[in-house]
Length: 223
Image 1 (cartoon, rainbow, N blue to C red):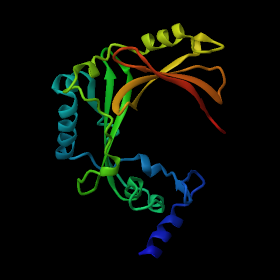
Image 2 (image 1 turned 90 degrees about the vertical axis):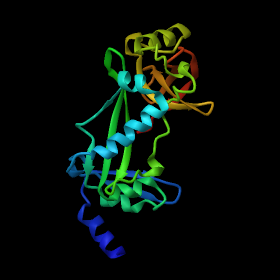
Image 3 (image 1 turned 60 degrees about the vertical axis):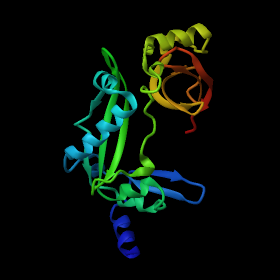
Image 4 (image 1 turned 90 degrees about the horizontal axis):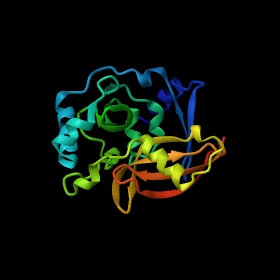
């Protein structure tokens, strides 16, 4: 079995690759064109399961108004044998085998380009790859204030400018929608970044509901 796995790894050793360094080892992931070509559609049973999960956390109204199924990118993908280098306890190990990617968009009302991708992965038998089960859906059922979504990207940028985010060119301040765990709770937040330095960038995390600045600091990009 091990020899078969190694043979598959060698077969797909191409120039284009991604190198991931873990505490124990350096893992080289070979990226192939086939990784981006789905070979079948997502079964209706799997899609309905994800629908139910979103509705149970966010409610039917929020689901209908803010979430949309991405039929273009969702589907059965062939798997990439180089992921066999991961430990079997790591969800990425299971991406070595055929798997279903189920992708949804959360989009701001009337601004579909302001969105975030939410992905659930299932194995080819239809079982959720649990280590990859995203718990990043906000709980709108217990507290509706978690899901007012009143702050769009322009408001988030205005808040950051008002507080004084450093930037050599105010027109280059950007806002991107992400998920973040704050004080134990999952939230959709805006990360507003400046262009003060491409490798050492200021950022503000701004709550999508209240406009509260949840965190600010710098992140470093190394080349």
